[in-house]
Amino acid sequence: METATDYSNYFEGALAAGRAIAGISPETIVAVLKDVADAAIAQTDQLLEANQMDLDRMDPSDPKYDRLKLTEGRIKDIAKDMMNVANLPNPLGHILSQKTMPNGLNISKISVPLGVVGVIYEARPNVTFDVFALCFKTGNVCILKGGSDAEYSNKAIIRLIHEVLKKHGIDKNAVVLLPVDREATEALFKAIGYVDVLIPRGSQQLIDRVRQQSKVPVIETGAGIVHTYFDASADLQKGKEIIFNAKTRRVSVCNALDCLIINASRLIDLPELVKPLAGKEVVIYADDEAYQALQGHYPPELLFPAKPEHFGTEFLSYKMAIKTVYSLSEAMDHIARYSSKHSEAIITEDAVNATEFLNKVDAAAVYVNASTAFTDGAQFGLGAEIGISTQKLHARGPMGLQELTSYKWIIKGDGQVRNP
Image (cartoon, rainbow, N blue to C red; front, side):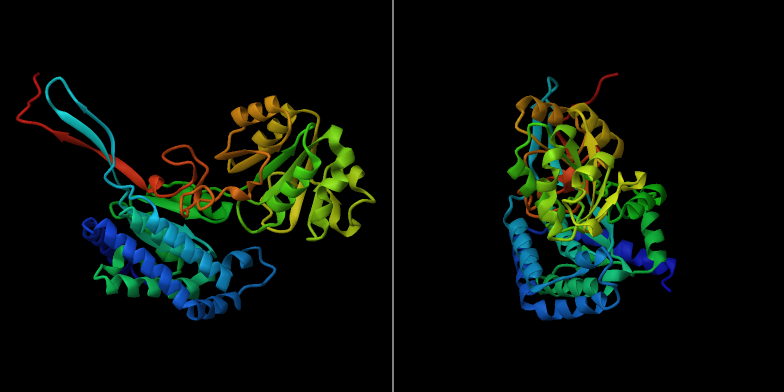
């Protein structure tokens, strides 16, 4: 078991690395990220071998299995995202505002790194690459606390990154991977003075635990309880494609659809609307009116009456709830009650309803006539993301480079003193 002193060594190493990387040139940062992307492709076999060791310990029916799984295609996508981050403009040193006061003081607000960023996450080895890329690009050190589910995968990824850092003569503590034991998590929660901000990525249970126990400031990247409202004026074909994509593209991710809300006037179209879902064996939990509309039109082994607990649930699997409403207002009330404020959508041809939905629904990402599957840093042009913040302080929605910076005030004078 690690001792408290051992954990302090992790944190002290990261803190020292932060001072060291502050002087790295933007050109070197780009070169490192491109080399890590190239190394990921070159070492695909080794990464997949380590990942398989993790997969062998998990039940394939576990919703986290798909998040844990690496493939050759996914590694290529990770490398592509890393190249995208490398090629994005440097977010540091930007003059956000500047003015000269009547007393001659020149005051500027300049973008700077957050400092040391801690990230605690579950079975998502891609997060290890993403967090390093975004933090390194923004001059931040990252301390990673992955779950035991992805232990072998994360160790292989960090080993790869450390090899590239060594090649460039950069302190390997620019990215630190903590042990998987629970004591390391507790130490991270208490790392005041070492860690500037802690970002959890994972289940609602994990996020709640971090928020409640951490002494370090937390940015919540909340679970996704996602709704799509099919309005009275909605286009059926658009709805079929959007709902199918939002629900089935990847069921284990936080932007996947959990609850379809349908206007009662369109219940006649409900069987056709959800017909494609049967091909993916999506289990539907429908309220009374929706259940009656679907009886005889959807496979009976996949159709069940909804219970109260099915609303406000993040399924992370091939399951979905359906709620019937009689107005846009009722739909928004349902969303307000159950939403995690992640991603919400309306399918409508009514411009007034679309505007009202956009203005009144409280979520990090609000859509009109598009799949919630787009809530993603890369899809938003951010290169990658460190998480999707569902809170309102500092950052909201996909957190890219800009969200990993803070600012400081630079004041230049010529002997000015303040009078009493």
